[in-house]
Image (cartoon, rainbow, N blue to C red; front, side):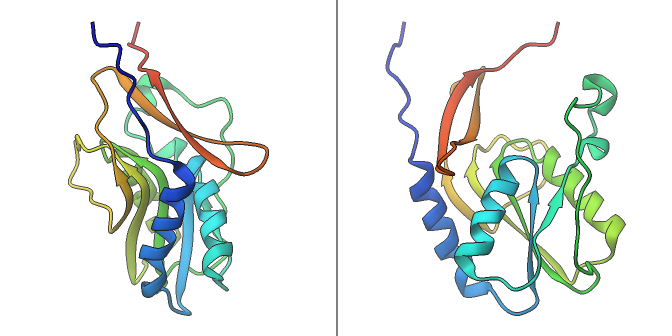
Length: 173
């Protein structure tokens, strides 16, 4: 049995790298939209770090998920908040972990309900690979490969510091 523990990258270092990758592409028409929950944490920090003037958008994609009929409604659904005009905006969609691509598909579907953006680019802290949909991020903090049956989680402490952790995937009953 392999007892070697997988070494995860430092989430704070990944955040700094991600901000540096995004910075050259920022202009006055750039708006950030974070996907709840981890994507919002990242987007809030990026908004401050990059000094963006447009207000921050927040998406809760619960109603847009393609597995809604299987998993039901998450008990902590919150409304989405898009406090700017989406039409003709250059949006950077921010999420914590990219895996199958289904969360991002749902987020893009919801964004289009608010209008037709000029462009959407994707910023991800960690790309896990194993896509089920043709989704790719333009800005990536790191790529991480996990053993089968393992999931990755982003946590934010009371100090607002970001941390990555691994947990076992729960198999459907």
